[in-house]
Image (cartoon, rainbow, N blue to C red; front, top):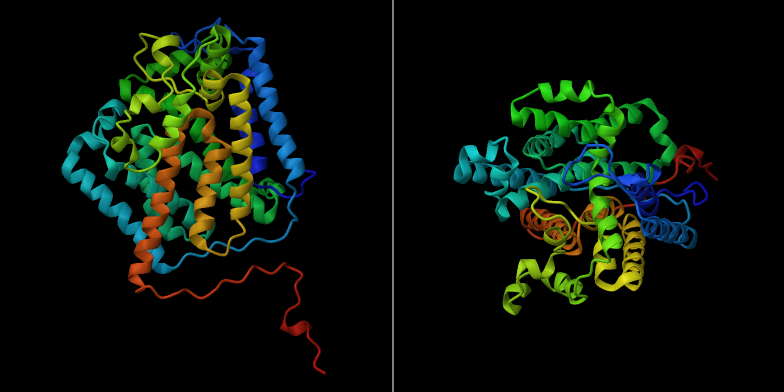
Amino acid sequence: MFIRKVFDFVSVAFIGQLIYFSPGFYGYVANPYAPGVLPSIPLVDQVYTVWQLCLGSTLLTGLLYRPKPAPIPALRTTLPFDLTAIALIAASFGYLLFFTGEELLSSDKNEVLGNIDRVFLLFASVCQIAMICFLVQAKWLRSLVPALGLAYLLYAGFRAEFAISLIAVAAYIARREGIFVFLRFRYLMPGLAAAALLVAYKPFLTAYRLGNWQVLDSLQMSDNFFETMILQFEPFLSQAVLNEVLSRNFQVAPGSLFDALVASVPFLAPLLGLRPEDAAFNHQDFLFPNIAYGITGTPQSQFFAAMGWVGLLIFLIAKNFFLVLASRGLASSKPAIQLFCLAFGAFLAFYIQRNDLANALTLINRMLIAVFVCWLGAWILTAGKRPEPRQVDEPDDAPTRTDVVPS
C-alpha cells in the first residue's frame, strides 16, 4: 500500500480483507445458535489457508498494477443530474409512504422487508449514488436529501448503502490526496465518527426495537464485555459459514455459479425458468438449520463449496481483475462512469465479503441502474445536448498565467 504510492480500490480491498478476516487474530468465530456467547467455535486450519491466498492475491495484484501517481479528473456532475437524483429520492419515498403507509416506518426490519419492492430498491440505490456524488463535490446542501434517505435505511436496519457510500468517498479522497490525508483533523474525526456509528448502532437499534434499554446495561456489566462485543462483530458470524464449509466439506452444484450469472441478466431468469433458490448459495438449511434469522455467506465459501480450490482461484482472479478495472475507471472523464466505478469499487473491495454471487451481482446491477437513470434524466432535461469536455485537474505546482514572462 505504501510502496505503490497510489491508494485505489486494490488498497481498499487489502484493508477490507484484514477487517473481514479479523477472526483469525482470535482463533474462533461466533456460534450462530448463540452469538456473543463464550466459548465459541475454533477455526480449522484450512480457513487460514483460504485467507492467506486471498491476501496474497491482493498483494500480488498491487505489485503488478502500480499506476503512476498522476492526478485524476475531479468528479463534476451537472445540475440536471443532481436534480434528477434528488427528484428520484423524493418521488420514490413518497410513493412508498403512500402505498405502504406506517409499515414503511416500522422498527421491525422483517415487517419492512415484507413490503420491499422495486421502488424501494431504487430509492436505496439512488440514495447511495447521490450521497457519493454530492459529498465528493462538497455539495453539502444537496447531500441533505440522500443523507436523510440513508438515515431512514439505517433506522430500518439496512446499513450497506451507508457503508458503501463512506468507503467510496474515502477512496476518492485518498486517491486524489493520499492516504495520509486522513490524519488531518477535518477528515479524521468524521471518519472515526462514521466508523463508530457502523459498529455501535446495531446494539442500540436492537435495544430500541425490543423496547428494553436494559439490554445495553447487561452487556456493559458482563465480565466478558470485550469478547462479547467482538463475537457480535459481523465478520465473526459471516466467517462462521466458511469455517463450517471447510470443516464439513460442504458442497453445492458447480452449475449454481452459472445460474447466478444468468440470474443477473434482467428478464432472462424468468424466461429460462430459473428460480431464485437455484441461483442463491443455499447453505443455511444444511449448515445452520432451525435458525430464525438469515446468515449471509461469503464468496470464498460459495466458490469453494462449488468447485474447491479451483473455484477459489477463479474468484480471486475475477475479483482482482475488476478491482483494477474499477480503479482505472476513476480516471475517466465521464462523470457517470466515474461515479459508477466509485460505488462498484467500494462494494467489490469491501462489502462483497458478506454476499454470495447472486446477491453481489444484484447489488451491482442496482448501482448501474441508479447511475443510468440519473444520467438519462439529466440527458432528457438538457434535451440531449452534449456537455462541455472536462479538463484533468492540474497539480498544485503547475505554472499559472503570472508565471509566464512576456517576450
